[in-house]
Amino acid sequence: MSRASDLARLLGAGGTITTDDNTDTLTLTSTDADANAGPNLRMYRNSASPADVDLGGVITFDARNDNSQDFEAASIKVYTEDASDGTEDSAITITCINGGTANNAMQINPTETTFNESSVDRDFRIESDGNTHMLFVDASVNGIGINTDTPTGGTNNNNAGFVELRGANGLNMQRYQDTVSYINRSGNDGDVVGIQQGGSTEGTISVSGSTVAYNGFSGLHESSGIATNTAIGTVVSTIDELDVYSSKAKGTNGIQDSPKAGQTRADHAKVKVSDTAGDKAVYGVVATFNEQGKVNVASVGIGSVRVTGACVKGDLLESNGDGTAKVQSDDIVRSKTIGKVTIGNSSSGVKLVSCVLYCG
Image (cartoon, rainbow, N blue to C red; front, top):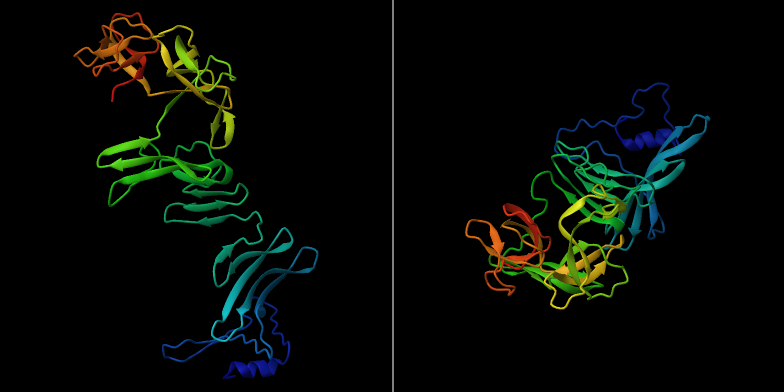
């Protein structure tokens, strides 16, 4: 036969070609030597009354189940979305069966391409040259992973690192022993990060030359020792005791067990409501309380300082001229003041001391 139309005439309406083995059931061959398309298979919906959303053609893949029943395993369907002359649109849908029910696995229409339109538990995965999950959508957790097959939060110490985008639990990024994220404003100075609450900008991180400014900044330091009904803004002072980690903590999976539960927190002093006028041990003011009942104290900053000689909480520090600090001779904050001791140490040698920092 020289033309496909000859085959159609031979088969007649609803014709079937059957083989009893796995040889090719139908082969279309073109022996033309030019660069044009061939062989060609044309599926033509020649409607007398074309309309929008007409089904233009279907390729169906049927099979048998183990109960000797036929079922439609998959199909490819083409629709005429818009039949108007000059603005014609079309769509194509690939349907698969999942759990005994046919569902829309992929759809291409004039304005978008959609995977998993039927919202079943079907993952989406793209491989790179060296990673099986370079881009991965985990349908069961509504998560997107880059370079990870488990975008479910937690810690992953592989050298490549990963990024997770997870609905209610936000963004999680990790990189092994290197900078996790770079944010670059190119062209001129200005805001790099905008921080909003309820759609309104409450603060920014901006850059001007080599200076980074934290606008609307308050340093918050977790502590404990006071009741959770203490009024916001209450003045608190440190005591000579380190705070400890809570048994629970907020993480990428919401509230979860803390791996450091019960361990002391370096430089985080416990606090009390200030009860002495002119208290040298004033630490800051109550800002918030977290889910574990820990208080966040608002103050400038905290850190460890190498100090020569004994010191007590509330002492101001200045340089000792050898890379260490010593106790300042008075309690006036001056340009030379490094910071204030929050937890005293009676050793006369050089040691690390927890302080709230004023210098900068």
